Length: 248
Image (cartoon, rainbow, N blue to C red; front, top):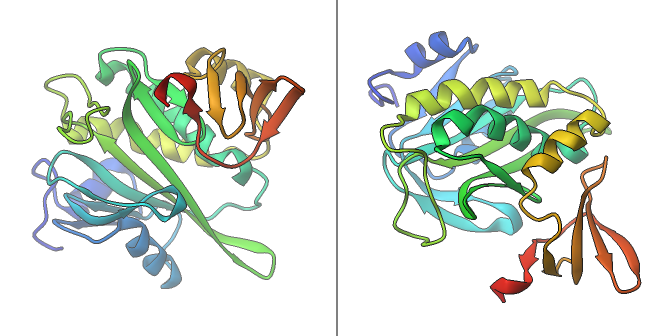
C-alpha cells in the first residue's frame, strides 16, 4: 500500500490534494468497499477514502462481483458519517446526479442517469454506484459510497464506455470526490429542484421497460422510487433493476 501511486501521487499526497483527513491507496485490492468498512470499524472519520488501482472482487448491487482492470478507472469507496438517516433513500441517486454534473466536461457528451445507480454516456455505462450503511441501535454509524468509474473505455463488457481521450484518473478524481461529498451532505428527500435536475439527465423517462415493472417510465419520485405507468395505473418501484423492452 505504501508504494502505490495514482498518476504519480501516493496516498498522503492525494489526501492533501483532495482535502481529506486520510486516504488508502492499493495497487490491488479485493474490494475497496470491504476495506472501507474495516477502516470505519476502526474509527476512520468522515471523508476517509479507499482507492485501488485494480480490484479483484469488486462488489455491486445484489452481491454481483467483478474484476476492475489496473489503471483503467477509479475504483474507490468513500466513508461518510451522516447525522441522520434522512437522505439514505435517495443517496445513490443524489450522489449520481452530482457526479454526472461534475463529469460532463470530461465525458465528451452529457452524462445521463439510469435508475437506480448507473451513469451513462450515449447509452453505454460509464460508472456505477453502490451504497452500504452500517447501523447501531437504530442509528446510522457510517455510510460507504462505492464508485466504479471507467476512465479508459473497457473492452469488456461491450456496452461500457469511458471518458474522453486524454482524460486522466487524477482529473476525474478531482471532480468526482467533491461531488460525492456534496451529494452526501444533503439531507432529506429529493427537492423539486433536484427532481428537475435529475429529469434533465434521466436515461429512462418515456421509455418502455419490462422490469422492475412492465410499462413506461414516468420519472423518479422524491424518495428515489422509479415511477412507471402501467396498464392499471402508475406504480412506484423501490427495488430491482431497470430493463428496457428493446434489450430483451
